[in-house]
Amino acid sequence: MAVLRQLGTLPGVTGWTVALSLDERKGRVIIEDGTFPDQGSFETWRARSQHQRAALRMSEIADWLVGDWNADAATNRL
Image 1 (tube, rainbow, N blue to C red):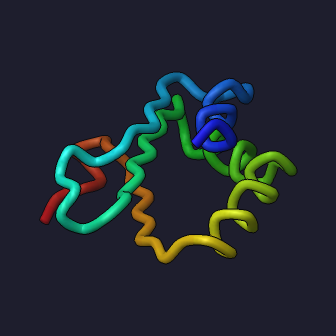
Image 2: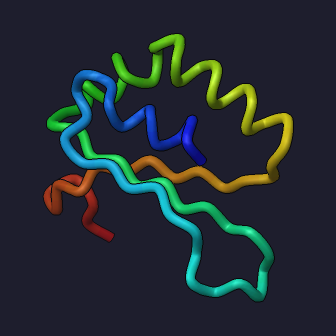
C-alpha cells in the first residue's frame, strides 16, 4: 500500500486516500480515492512513470475494478 500512498504526493493531486475496506468478507480490498483540480491534472498524473509502475505492479498481483469520474454535477446527470 505504500506504493499507492506515494502516488498521492505527485504534483497535481489535491486529495488522496488509500485504505483497507472495513468489510473483510471479500478478503483484502484496497480503496484508492484521488482528487485532481481538473481533467488535465489527472491525465498528466496518470501518464507519470510512477503511476505506470504502480499500475503494472498492481496488475500482476491483484484483480481490480477501476472507476474514474468527474464529480462536477453538471457532467454527471443520469
